[in-house]
Length: 433
Image 1 (cartoon, rainbow, N blue to C red):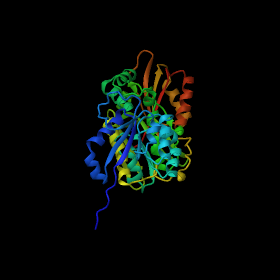
Image 2 (cartoon, helix red, strand yellow):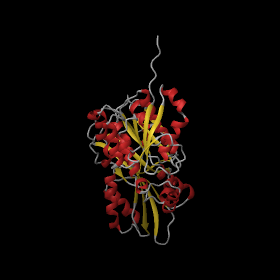
Image 3 (tube, helix red, strand yellow):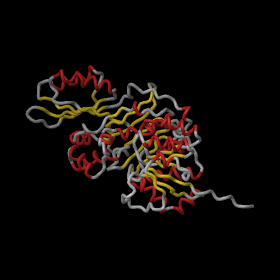
């Protein structure tokens, strides 16, 4: 019996030679034999694309054809997979992926913003062309969360997806706590270390992490990507006092993404939350990411690892490439694009306890006035703690029983009329794990 004919090498065209692009080149060069052994065929790079060919990129690119136009790279006849690592949700990246699909190429991308804005339309185009779009590297760096949802947990009805999905924010919050430093100082430290995007609000405003949450929610709940429905709140208002006081009460503050399907619709939020200090999320330090998946059969799964960086993200890119090399061909969001439902955004979030910090003026009956406002809003108090005061005011911390954000906002709106509150109150949801 004759042996099966060996498959020809799978040919890559890589657009974008930044940190992740060069990391991908290095893996292909360093592990050629390992890749061939694991997939049954070789994987090679035939062409690359970047604006500046003369830049020193710490990798030997001399054996590859060079393009300065990503669309031209996507249309080349000598590539099988177009690997898009440029970023940006409009312009060259979108045009090049559309060109790749139209000319019969599969696509691997790390572009969360593009997929969060145009993922459904691109999925429809890919299926119409008989091609696949894979994006493991777009969410949580080296953590294989896309594969876990689309393959490992495919037999589960998902109940909730949540996690810390932006390493920069987690670094800032844990650094504030460990060093006792204010937000502005740690923000500047993160900027100097190169941890922040060119537009820092993508990180600290929750936008980057919100893109990731929207993609996970689509896969988990069978809905069209709905990034515009994600409730976003960044970490800029979190003070070192909040971090210390939350710690005193047994909590840590995290920028936490949560998506769950409720009777009112799909709830998606990326906001600061308190989590129990002893929980896996509470113990997460530095730039590490963590995603928690809850299914009806499997229960709770916790995935933890590097959420960014050359090696981890390039590892995720190559995971997708190797799946294609093996012949694994999945739909973009885990089911045919035509079956994805329009997501009805939940207008009211699931009730939860809240942490509130108030600065009360030293006036007779101040606490009674505050509790009366909370009572009028239907909010009951679980715990209250008052700290040492100066001559005019004192910080008061309140942990409520389960309530809604609408009730909290109603109370905050009424508090100034009491004339006993100094400054703006802070209210942060406590997520039950």
